[in-house]
Amino acid sequence: MTGHFTPDRPGLRSWLPGFLALAAIWGSSFLFIKIGVEELHPLQLTLYRVAAGALTLLVVLAVLRDRLPREPRVWAHLTVVAALGVAVPFTLFGYGEQRVESMLAGIWNATTPLIVLPLAVLVFRTERLTRRSAVGLALGFAGVLVVLGVWEGVGGSHFTGQLLCFGAAACYGVGIPYQKRFVAGSKHSGVSLSAAQLLIATVQLAIVAPLVAGAPPVPTDLSPRVLASVLALGALGTGLAFVINMRNIRIIGASTASTVTYLIPVFAVLIGALVLDERLNWHQPVGALIVLVGVAVSQGLIGRRRPAVVDVAAPAVPAAEPATR
Image (cartoon, rainbow, N blue to C red):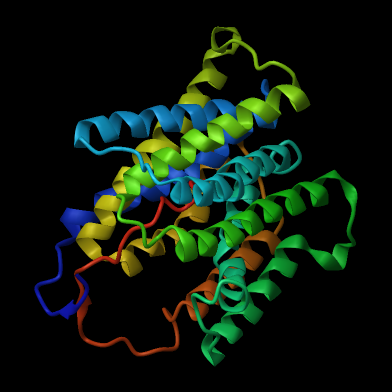
């Protein structure tokens, strides 16, 4: 059921703690990736992370007495989503963070909506391009150039790392509209679809990781610091975070809940600075601000009057947006 009503707005205490917790969990994921690749190949880190997330959501499914999808068609589409929305981008962020700061990876994650929109318009036909969204895209990609610091020239390990992080965001940009086009209309719950997606990604990575990176080390051989980061990435960033996001959508609606995107790079930068003592060049936060303004304009959060109504019915929830995070 969808519709617009005008009930009392939910109080801040009912949703703000979960909203901030979600931003902190996803923002801190880049810190955990940075720590994880100290001892693990990016593919091995992703394998452990996704497996831990799958186990977490299977427990949630059992608690909710829900079940995995059974239709072959759904599993076929989820195979594509698992690769584009989980296995490949998670791995690219790992490769990228071998070369760049965790806070910079968090900034690149914020460019995802800029890639989602043109693909949703031109390829998947789930959105339409308006003048407002075109202006937002132009602003956003100008911000990307500022973050890259193109006037300083290109090349080098740091620049390559940024491109790898941008490639991860580009994977999300393909995976999200594909998911919306082919999976979102499924009768299954978001938890069910996400658990299936993570299970498929685990199988994909279990095949590829040993071929590329060798057999993954036994978890007990990892340092406590790295092992804790892997568990946090899987259980929190890929498992619990989805449950929190679902709760936020139910309370404040999908549109408002999606604005957590704007806080993720803030937490990524703060955590990277406080925990790892990372520093950014002046143009990187400036470019990030331009990117976020562009995203806000393209999504209608700036430059458009909002109707005085509240959407209290969230649309059918697709598989969890890639936990980028």
